[in-house]
Amino acid sequence: MMIIPFRQLSEEALDNLLVEYVTRDSDASEISIETKKGQVLQQLKNGQASIVFDSQTQSSTIISVDELV
Image 1: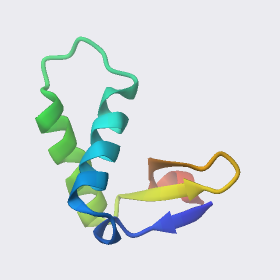
Image 2 (image 1 turned 60 degrees about the vertical axis):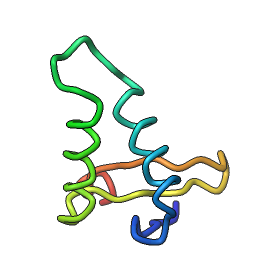
Image 3 (image 1 turned 180 degrees about the horizontal axis):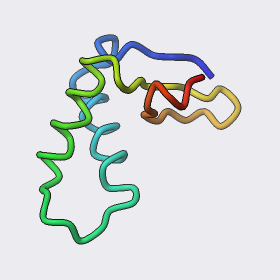
Image 4 (image 1 turned 120 degrees about the vertical axis):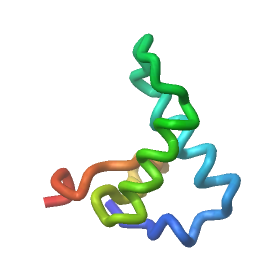
């Protein structure tokens, strides 16, 4: 896995990744997608989460830094 700094992504690519991530296991919560995206983006900015790229599956996702260990 390779860590991708979120600031290296285009605004559109980051937005698409955030939407995919927050809607992946979507439940019927009262929190809007925009609010969830903002929360995850804040985690990326604070270093609590990272974007990782898996070369075998050719896919990216967001994980907490605790999962990187």
